[in-house]
Each structure stands twice: as structure tokens, then as C-alpha cells.
Length: 102
Image (cartoon, rainbow, N blue to C red; front, side, top):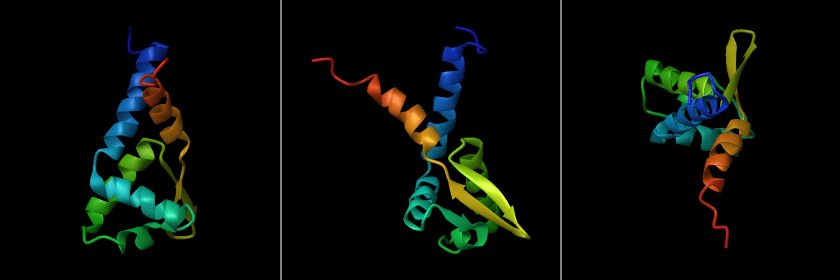
């Protein structure tokens, strides 16, 4: 299988999503977004953590690269919107491989 093949792209997507989910803080950010209506400013997200600003920014960038959040600019604010599509598409398809056929 080549890196440009469909299977290779699927594995790349899987790696991006699972890597984003590998860190507790990023999973927490996704849960907080979901519980707060799916959308928060970067400042609101950062206020929920004891991490430094660069650390929160790095976590948000990783979630964005995985397609799990999208950034909307509203004036000077960066608003992060949850996108569960990749989570279900990538994670769901990977989990279905383990479903019993019985």
C-alpha cells in the first residue's frame, strides 16, 4: 500500500485523530466544548486549565489539525467549534473492524 493510496490516507486520518485523543488535556477540551454547546473562545478554554498559554495553544492546534475543532475568527477572538464528524468517521470505522460477525 502506498502513502497516496486510499488505505494510506485512511491510516493517516486514523493516526491524526487517535494522536489528538492520546493526551488527557485534549480529550478534556473536547468534552468541555461538547458540554458548553460545542463552541468556546480560546480564552474560555484556557481558563479551564492550569497550563500555560503556549501549551493550550499547542493542544488546540493539534485538535484543529486532526479536524476535531474548527477555528472561527470573530473580531480579535478565536472561537473553537467542535466537529465530531472525524471522530465518528475515523474512530467508528476503526472500531467496526472489531465487531463480531456472529
